[in-house]
Amino acid sequence: MLDLVEHARQQKRVKSREIAERQQIPVKYLEQIINTLKRGGLLLSVRGADGGYRLSRPASEISVYEILHALEGDLSIIDKEDDSWSEGHGFFWQELEEQLIQQLRISLADFAANSRNSSHGYMYYI
Image (tube, rainbow, N blue to C red; front, side):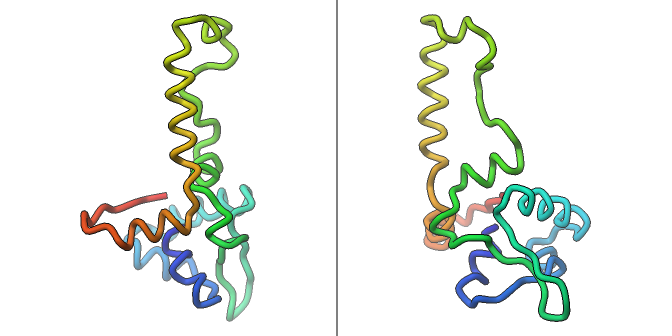
């Protein structure tokens, strides 16, 4: 997704082969991820010679939480079906989950900007 953010500024569709080469991951694996993100409504694809992939919305309107939710499903750290979580001992975990989700609500655009501006050289795989 970060790779697509960089190319979104150029209004350019990106081929999976190009992404796979830049990110050094197998094309087949990337295609599985892309299909999941397409089903999640985060990517659009166009077939043909000028085809490729692009974000479905501006990066400022897509959150990291949405991406992780599309890829991983429910991100809950508690079992909401278990009634014991509503009792006192579950409060800590509920609060932790709310804070985690709040942190993940950062937009993809802001996440990308933070990644570019970071001097730590972190590698993010989403």
